[in-house]
Length: 333
Image (cartoon, rainbow, N blue to C red):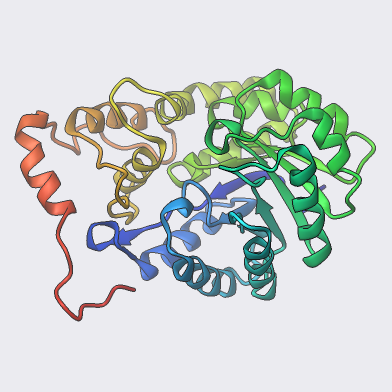
């Protein structure tokens, strides 16, 4: 069994002060809750964890705080993607120095150096960092695709150990699994609504943002599939699917990050606001999320718990409460 498999949580980032400060006690408490729920691994500094919006010093602080706290209780990887090769190597070394068992790296984005530069980027990172590398393929977000032919070339690098594929194409996942056969690499799926099908197609695990909301269900699903009880797994999946589908795509202008944080808060965790320019979830969307969560067998909520407000009634208090700033000299950590 690969080190990383099963339900791997893309760790969400609790925040205070209108999203301008990391809520460190809530973050550590959330990690403990996820581990107690039985998750098989954790991804620190995930996209779900608002990686793109964190300042460089915050990213390092999160690594220095969370990895000693996890302390080997579950396998832990850290996203170390940076725009430049030098910064990626520096971030990767920092993560490994603090106990990361793998680093997840995007291909160079924005001004992409084409295939030759992407291959060079990963080769140099792999040479500089003595740990497993997770390729991160999310072309819709990064604008750069790790194609199957590029993946074949990257597998020649010894410590390329995983591909996290977030394209949302089950046929592509099957192709990547086939390419990986006979190598030291495995495929992880990063598309939440594909979970049971990607696992049945040969992905060894899910890197899962919605596992912040429903870790017990996610763990049970992957364990049922691993045991070959696909019928029972799909029964469970039918209860999980409404939330999975809503977070991935909806018509209520709710992005994945604020949606996951709002839902995780609804099931009893402390998440706080998202960092701007992400926007808070509206009242009508909260009603939809509430309905989705009510189907969950373990982390479900009572639909009478929340009161629906029209957006016109909600906007004043919601915007005001999420734009509050700490007093001068306040603690931002």
